[in-house]
Each structure stands twice: as C-alpha cells, then as structure tokens.
Image 1 (cartoon, rainbow, N blue to C red):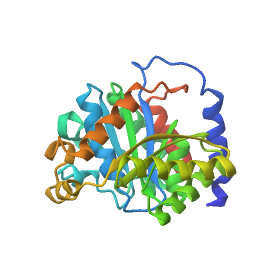
Image 2: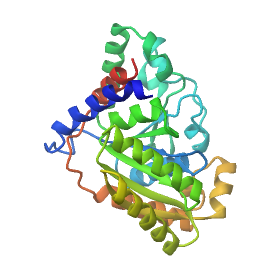
Image 3: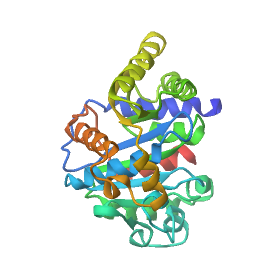
Length: 292
C-alpha cells in the first residue's frame, strides 16, 4: 500500500489545484465515495437508501458498487445483475446492458471483477468505455460504495472523488477502524474534508456524543476537517428489509431509519461543495490511471 503513496498524493494534489473553481451543478455530477473502517456497519444499506431518497427528490443518481468481489448493493435492491463493468469494458457490452434500473429510477453499475482486471485492459478498451459512459452524463450524483478497511482499492477510490463520507457505529472497534481510515486519508493527503455518519445509534444523543468523541481525536491528531452529517438509529425494521431484499425506505417509509435517511439526504442535497465537479468520464479516467 505504501508503494502507492506518491501516486495517490499526486492525484489528490491535482484535484486540489482546481477544487475552488466553480462549475454549474447542472453540468457535472457530485461524485461521492462512501466507505468505512470495517465491515458490518451498514455502509451499503446507507448507500442504497440515501440514493433512493435523493432520487425521490428529483435527483438522478448512479451507484457504482466498487466493493470488488464482495458488492451486495444489487441484493439490497432486490436486483440480479447479468453483467458488470468488466463486461462493458472487455466484453463489448453496451452500458445500457450493464446498468441496472433500481427503485424510483436509481441506476446501479455493478463493479464485479472490473477494477481488479484494469491492469490487463488495453488503451483502446479504456477509450471505448469512456465513450460508453458519456451516455450517462445527465447524472446529479455518482455514489461509490467501496469495500471496507484500509487497502489500495479503498484509498484509490477516495483519491478519485471530491467528497468522502465515512460510516461508523458507536462500537469502540468501529470507531478505532474509522479513525485509522481517516488517518490514512490525512497521511496520503487524499482529502482534507470528511463527512461522518454514525449508524446504529440507540438515540440522537448517542449519535452526537459518538461523533464529538471521534471529532476531538481527529482534530487533535489529524490535518483534516470533519463534519457531522447525521446519525441513523438502530431499527429492527432495517434487518427485516434486508431479509426481504427491499430497501427499508420503500418497505418501511415511516420507520425511524427512513426518517433519518431522508434528513441526511436533505442535508446532502442542500450542501454547497466548494470544489470542481467532474464528469463521469473524468471519474473513470482517474480510476484507470489509479488502478493501472
């Protein structure tokens, strides 16, 4: 992983040079990486449901399931993908064949084994794929759902995006792993701004207390700005929704978890990010450069 440090730093610095330039929001999407320090914190559940909430707010959202080999966004959405991004790049499949249309029109691009095979992709295949994804240029949000932990893939996706959300829970092990991830982001200078969501909180007070504890350590030791995006309360209906393979925002729209997700989506929608936005072509060019 340390061998990739200089490459990741360069990519992050290139983005920083243009971060304060304004680009009309109607032309380019906000590209957000959602990740976590460890598995089992509800990251993918958050991604699927917040995407649906944003879509219901008349935003066009694409989820890129970037958890290579372990992605389960399709399962949470009750979909069965026939192809992945690998088929669009290497098997000459049209992007329309690969994209899954989910609830309320949310689009899902399954990652599959695509990123792990990037080193084998030819220059012409990359160029052709960039042309294909240009058909998806009407997007308002592209949300990358990465794997968990600190590894080359996760740090690479963080480096490719302007916005970063880390999901954690009040459990000490989850907070420790989330801090380790934030430390890596700071050390490699991948981003200087992190938004945090506390999942599985017993009440609002615990969510705020957990974030404040996390923030105090980050502020003391790391060179990143940290913001509280909200908490999602523990809700048994969420477990049942996963078993039903129907997002809880649809299955239980009046549940506490759904109310929390809608509030977070409203915050995201109303946030003005002082950074240059990238097209989906720009995103995949960065991904190809990072993982080649």
